[in-house]
Length: 260
Length: 251
Image (tube, rainbow over all chains, first blue to last red):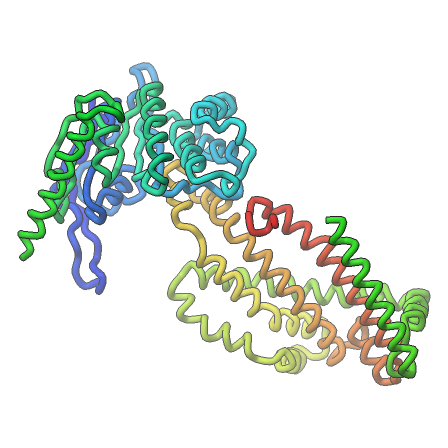
C-alpha cells in the first residue's frame, strides 16, 4: 500500500525581481510505501524542504497529483491522514511546558481528551523526558528540545511522519544518539517516514530506501534501496555512504557541467 | 530577594534623611521638610481633597490610556502584519511621536472645548504613538515557524490566532502598556493644569499660584507613591506571572 504518492508535480517560485519564475519541480514523481522509512537526499537549496511542506499541507501552490493515505485498519474510518512533523528547529511553543506542548497538538489534532494523559506519558517516557514534563523549552538543552519535538510528532499517532533535517542543528554525538533513538521509536510504532537530509551517512543509516533529488527543476535522479543492518559500527554502512556521496556529487557536477 | 528589599529600604531612608538636612539649611518656602510635607498631606486627606482629586485624575488617566492602548495595538498590529500599512503609516507615527504633548493638549481643548472629552483625547493622543511603535516591532518579530507548526498539526485559524500569535505579541503589548502608562500619567497632570478645574494637576497649579511649596511637595509625593504602588504592586507582578516562560525575565 502506498502512503504518500506524488505525480507530475510542478512548482514555481517568482524570482527575485518578481518578473520571472524559477521552476523548482517540473514533473516530479515519487512514492513512499506504508511503514517505509524513506530518506530524501539532496544538496541544500534543491527543494527538499519545499517538497516536505507540500506533503505537510503548508504549501498548496503547485500543480500535479498529491495523495496521502492513512495506514489505519479497514474498520476505522479515517478521512484525512494525520501528519506528524519534526522541523529542523524544535518549534515548541515557548510559553507552554513540555507537557502542554504535547497537549496542544493532541487538542488541535482532534484526539479524544481521555487519551491525552496516557499518550503524553507514553511518549515523554519513550524519549526519556517524563521528569522534565513541567519544564519550559528554554530550560532544556538543544537535544532535549528536539526530543520533545519528536515526541510531539509521535504523540498524535500520525499516519505519516515528516522530518526536515531534524538532527542537523545538533552536535554529532547528540545527533548520533538521537538517530538510534529515532529508529527505536520507529520500530516500536511502525510509522511511515519521509525524512529529508543532506547527510549521506545519516540517510544510509536510517533509510529503507533513499531517493536522491537533483538537478533544477528537481526530480528524483536516483533511487537507492538500503538493505544493510542499521549498525553504526558496520564497515558496510561506511562504504555505502561514501558511494552515495559520490553519486550525489556526480549529479551536482553534472549540473555544473551542463551550465558551462 | 530579602537583601534587595533591605537595599531599597536603606535607599529610601537615606533620601528622607538628605531631604531633612536640606530642608534645615534652606527656608521652608523653597524646600519644606518631610514633617511639614506630611502634615500638609494629612491636612489634604482630612478635607477629602486627596482622594477626590486622585479619583478624578485616575479616571482621566485610565480613560485616555485605554483609548491609546486600543488605537496603538490596532495600528501597531496592522503595521507589523501588512507591509502596505507599514509603508503608509511609519512616517506619520514618527511625526506623532515628535510633536510635543503641549500641541496635542492645545488642539484637543480647542476642538473639544475645556471638557472631560478634550482632556481624555489629549492624553490618548500623546500616549498612542509610543504604544504603536512598541506593538509594531513586537508584531514584526512573530515567529512564522510556530504558525506553520500549528498549521501542520491542524490548528484552526482561531486557535492559531489566540494560542500561537497572541502569546507572542502579548509581551510587547505589556511592555508598551507600562511605557505608555508612564507617559499618560505625566501628561494627565499637565492636561489638568491647562484646562481642568480639578484633579491632581489642577491642585498642583493652585499650590503654585499661592506659592504653597509644602502643597506642591505633598501632591507630588502622593501621586508618585500611588504610581509606584501601581507599578510595583500590580504591573510588575502581573508581567512576571504572565511571562514566566521567558528566560530573560527570570533573572
